[in-house]
Image (cartoon, rainbow, N blue to C red; front, side, top):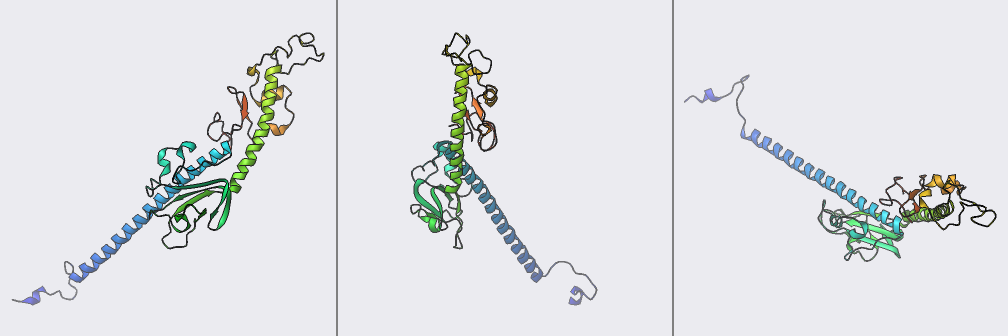
Length: 286
């Protein structure tokens, strides 16, 4: 048998791969597969984290809305659970359904103990909301929910808790706004009552009875005891009646005209989003 015919001479091509070449190719494919799978897992985890943060921010916004209305923070449900009934949220908002499936930790203080995050005080009227992350464990200071100290930026290698908070300084701005709104709305409501009670001839002006003998010098005057709320249609009606002279009472802290609630005979603010939601949403209705 002539084996020389099986040899590949100079300048000649050969077909197929050697075992060494196949082994190298398989090793490269394996490395690429591991890299792609690892990258996919990292991206998927990051996407879940982003969605969880977004959900936590929505809970945070609900708490701010509650505080705007009541000037206090809702207490947690038993076990440091998000109080979804108070916040008008679905039951699923109690759990980190996207990232871990575990309950969030909800810790609030309304004028009581001072809460700290990463060693810094966030006030004694404040909120902390925590997700345990992908390892399902609250870590570092978050492991003890009772000591009022919590960790947002962990120092351990495996730390992956997600923490958002509302500080007392942030809430104080809402307090100032609400008190300003309450004071201005009280003035507007009083003016509205004067117009409704005293414009008996419906001319948009408060009737006068200079002689003090109602029904004599002013037959259509202001002593018939009838309150006509239909005469009040908003800020403009009070201005037209000459009942407002201070421009500060015309707009709320966000520069929006106060809204008139004709059903309940009161003024209210459309809130930070400047959208009248009929005393719903983030409207502020003292």
